[in-house]
Image (cartoon, rainbow, N blue to C red):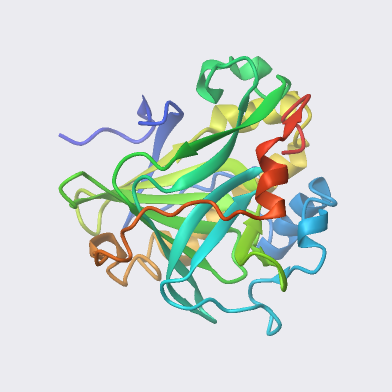
Length: 291
């Protein structure tokens, strides 16, 4: 028996999730008001004024720009969210979007509470106000395919079980990517907290879960977003649902849930020895309000 809409649970990463829809059925908007996608993105870029203007990205251009550098198949790159840096290997890169593979064990730098707790261990009412530091870790669990459609404020991550069977697709809401035109090859964005999860069961009628709505509300209370900007994030989720999630459009229709790397593609990736990575490794700060 399937769970009714409105059911709640806790995700594998510890976030609160709510069953909000099913593919093939009507979608109840999450946003408080209808906001055009471009307007929603602009509201959030205002929140992150200067977010893409750090020294390392002074020459960065939008990923859908004709001036954006393209990456070769097999090339290792950095996939960066603010202070958080991950390593990935390119599967394909073209005008439509970037597709990468993150092998299990690949290096990453993550922003974590400075007192040794994990982010999920910090109560919601403190989550954006605790001091932070950068910690080096690795990608745990099976490798994952990530797709970043050019110019869109989301990426889609195809998770799988240890035996390679698909577990579902994670829609990470984030600012449209930028690409630096010099320095270490990579992409840069900012995470927008709210996410969607598409279960792998019931093909064509998959359950769709909303993740971290409570954390987005806490971000408003603690000053990371305004109420209007939180509405913009919810509107982006609605646009993702309409654009590709409910109709099963790209990248859900291209078989990435079943893509298998060869041995060379599946080698864990180390962080490059660059000035930017060295500087990031030593990062600390007072709050997570801007990161």
